[in-house]
Length: 416
Image (tube, rainbow, N blue to C red; front, side, top):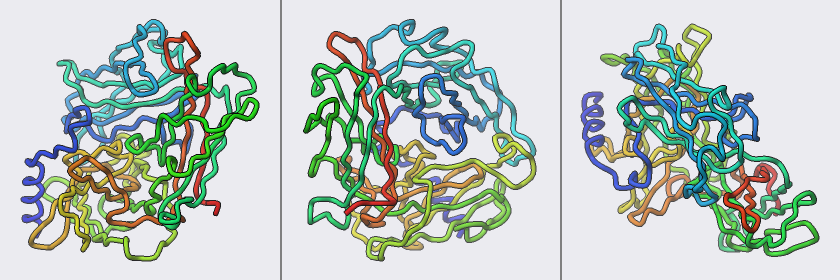
């Protein structure tokens, strides 16, 4: 059976998925990219100006390559802002990543790289949208990641309710929010202020170009009926591979493979026709960790082949199925596509992953590129989701979009 699965794994890796064309290239030997604040229990690369954050990743070729980073500033819509690097940075736009070490006592050798910002070579002058590109000594791009720097000049309040649309009352969540700006002079709010509204910090489904509907003194009110409805989806699935040789949460068994261990997950079943069940999660995020000796999971955690399988009776013809979450930057990459195994009648994928606790979900993408988080697992208004609103401000005559505020909301106490 394992031989059949490995054969299918090789087969689906050779099949190109058109859905990945929207994403920048990523070297397949570069894994476990983490970009987040250094503060504990912070998973999302949205930082206050001056706050420390870290980028880290593994190179499975373990040959201590020289990697470099390049930081670029973008506008609200993720177009280059047109500013020179001297305008938004103090120091170097591009520099070598000097902090790297080899893994210790692992079956899969790798070199772990990390760099902390701001650092002596690179500091930030401006808030805004940024991208960091990491490339090797031959100018081959390893990966690209987005991050946001902000200052809290305005306040944003969020409330999450059941959808006002009766046809989606049980399946969608409706978000309303307001922005208070007592200390900022805004002459034309509908033109100078822009917002991004995100569910679980996934830029793929972010809502943009929302205009304020009402003005009340120095307050902007966004109270749409349909425009700010999100499919609520279902709670994320999860597994914990912190013990490389032992079955743990949601792991059926661990097999000894020819080179690395095989982590076989229990077969997932569709939940679209099941009643909602509360299942606490971390909304698609992940934490690298290990209990197999050592005090530094960055270097001591090993890699295993993780076997995903899904039993679904839904009609998914014309759609592709992907494993999705923060681990893969919410990208529908080819290596995370589920393929039908005719021998088992299940959708299957095998993914090389570092030990840790992972949240994931199954999404579908149709031929027009439309994503769905509910074709397989359904959508329930009670699902606990994180919501974030980012406030951008460009006064008349300015050359870039400032990020002047951020607001958070959680649907664990949804309003009717």
